[in-house]
Image 1 (tube, rainbow, N blue to C red):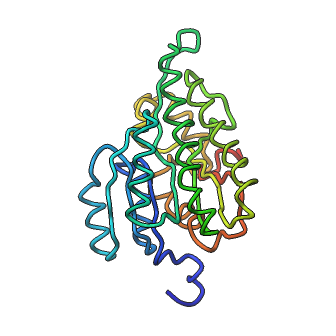
Image 2 (image 1 turned 180 degrees about the vertical axis):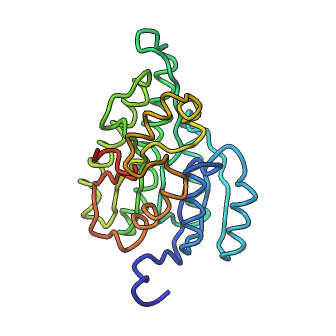
Length: 254
């Protein structure tokens, strides 16, 4: 790639994406393939047939590493296996979980599960992959945060806490690793019509309330994240450190 788009070229890079089986993670993985990166998906299930077709179409390598994000040993093994495949230049921490209860009735086991997957696993993956990035003096880490890093939400105290923590981890890592050529940033999706939000999508009253509040007039689609992810993964963002970039149809500006 030459000319004015060269700053967004990912040819020769290897990216790890967690939770790319569907939704936002799938869209990000496909966008990185299209931009020229080889992709390693970290998830329980093999990559989808559509993601495999995209890899063939764009002549990029697509690998699968099995991981259980609730288990420290599984994450450590996945980091090691990924590093054996290729030096990892880009890490996208997309995978997450959501559990809803009234706060007074929120079981500690469910609170721990959400924090383990959404925060502790992100910490372990960031530090595990950043070690090689710091040594090579280049790397891009993109964490997926949430509007609930800014707002409390309803019946989701664990998720709100976990995503607030991810936003702060992003800043903390950026402060330490920026001088070593590693960019750490976060994307903040707004209301996206994904499986995680199916309860809201199916609630006619809540769906209407949310849609009315969004200046763009619609819920986000997974592909709406793709451009932000490619930007933060590319040389175009080399002087961007520690930001939380909303992709929310204007929700936070309302």
